[in-house]
Length: 91
Image 1: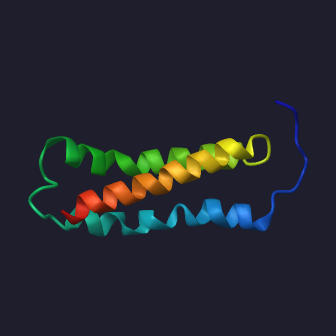
Image 2: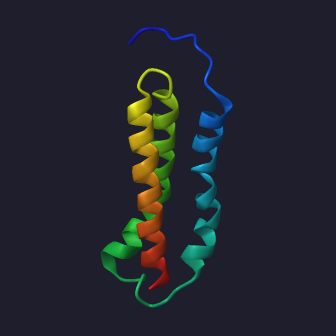
């Protein structure tokens, strides 16, 4: 990879930053026990998902200038994962 000195647009920085905002909901979702989530693999997914989100955002931030397509894919998959986890938590 070459050293890129180009400035990242503000909207890209905000998009990546806003991708972390749903993690503020996480403590509330873990306290909201519906009986379904407390079983097996769903509970494990709920516990490790914040780490996945942080790693995705860190990787998106790292490749924002060099590989913008990868950044878009990471952010899109992260938001789809948020939708899936929120749906699982609502059951």
